[in-house]
Image 1 (tube, helix red, strand yellow):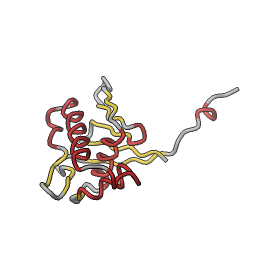
Image 2 (cartoon, rainbow, N blue to C red):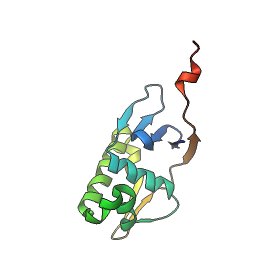
Image 3 (cartoon, rainbow, N blue to C red):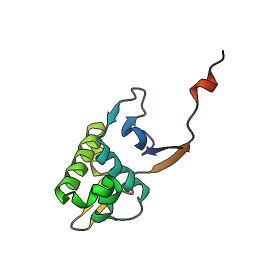
Image 4 (cartoon, helix red, strand yellow):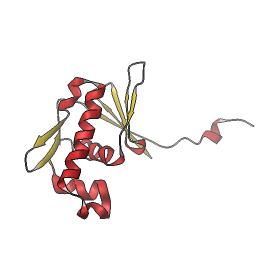
Length: 127
């Protein structure tokens, strides 16, 4: 099962391959580092709520999360914001910081979630 999110009707996010693609004919794609991608995925999944800082550590880094500093979390959020801003200046406000509490996905951006099953390419070819 593959998840993909359409953000603001023209930005596609594939968490499985950590890619953001602009759906405008050019199909400009940015590949995020894995922690930044996991941060975005968590923010989108909980887009109607504040995500406390401590929730990111286990979700993004798993068992190693207990050893991750707050600076590392903020660095990955900064990298995510930089990638979003590269796509469009309007996306720099997609991730909101709630000081000393956590982060929130900005509700001004719509999100459509699609779940698809993998297609077996071998079944599409004839012998």
